[in-house]
Each structure stands twice: as structure tokens, then as C-alpha cells.
Image (cartoon, rainbow, N blue to C red):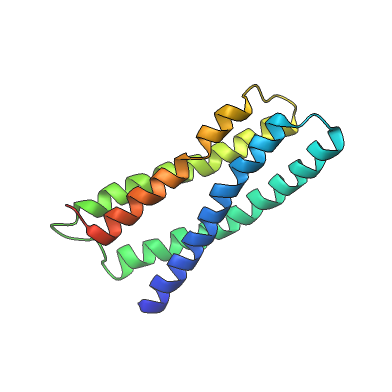
Length: 140
């Protein structure tokens, strides 16, 4: 079980690295006017999004293995797990929202400012803080 947990943490940390960095690319895309720079940023964003998706899948599979296979978070007194799973669902939604935003940039349809993306970039930070507190502290 410890290897499953260790690899779950590795894939979660790697997925989050992408969730933190892709919106930073969006900030730059929203500010950039040079077409050559825009194309380079779009290439970086596409490659990062594909890689993030590949990291997300084993993170989720290993988490399910810990929950359903080893029973972590099952039974009474594990309300923290339900809250954490809600955060995971929100993170999956955020991941897919990043993909939708990327398509808008690719199609020249972005209407949001770099300031909006700066706030959007903080969402996974807040969700990570909440998830870590829930898993470590287990407040309920």
C-alpha cells in the first residue's frame, strides 16, 4: 500500500505542477501581441495540457485504489474523504476548463484579460491547500 500511496502523491504533485503553470501561460497569451510569441506559447500550452492529462489519469486511478482497494477514508468518521472527493471533482472540472480555455486561445476567441487569468491561476492553489488539510488533519 505504501508504494501505491507514494506514487499517488508523485502523480498528484506532477499534475498540480501543470495546473499551476498552464494558467500562467494563459496570462502571457492574454498579454501577448506578437504572433510568433503567441504560436510558441500555444505550442507550450498544448504540450503541457496533454502531459497534464497523462499525469491526472494515474493520480486518479491510484487514489481510487487507495480508497476502494485499501479502504482509506471508508467507514464512519471519514467525512473528510467526502470533502476531499468533492475537491477532486472540482479539480477535474478545472482541468477540463483549462482545455476549453486553450481551445478558445487557439481559435482566437479569448475575451478575458490577463488580470482574470491571474485570479484563475489561484484556484488550484486554494484547492490544494484544502485537500492537504483534509487529508492530514482529518477535521471531520
